[in-house]
Length: 125
Image 1 (cartoon, rainbow, N blue to C red):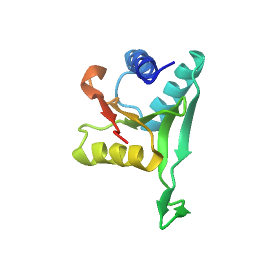
Image 2: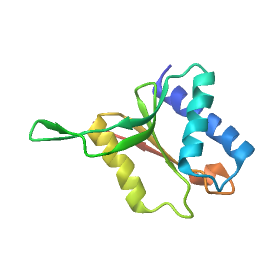
Image 3: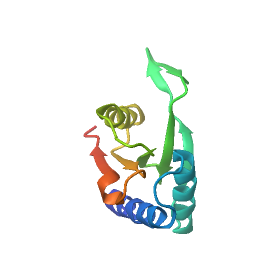
C-alpha cells in the first residue's frame, strides 16, 4: 500500500469516527478509536510512539510522542481544539523532520465537519 492509499484510509477512518462520536472528546479517545479502526482495516497503527531527539549524535528521550504512526510511514497528530494554531502545524513538521517520515496528517476533531479539521504535510527529506 502506498503512502497516498494509507492517507486515504486514515481520512476515511477519521470521518467515520467523527460521524459516530462528533466533536468534544479528548485527543486520547480519538487516537484510540483511530488506531482501532485502522487495525480493523489491516493496517499497522501504533499510538504514543516515542520520538527521541538526536543531538550531537546522542539520542535523547525528552518526552515527545507521536499520537498515531500508521504503517511506519504516516504520522497522525491529533487535536481536539477550538482552533489549530501555526504552532501545532510546526509541531507536526518538526516531528516529520525528527523521524525522517515523508507524510504527516494533522486532524482536529473539534470541528463540525471533519474536512475543516484535516491538514496534510509533506517532508521533502
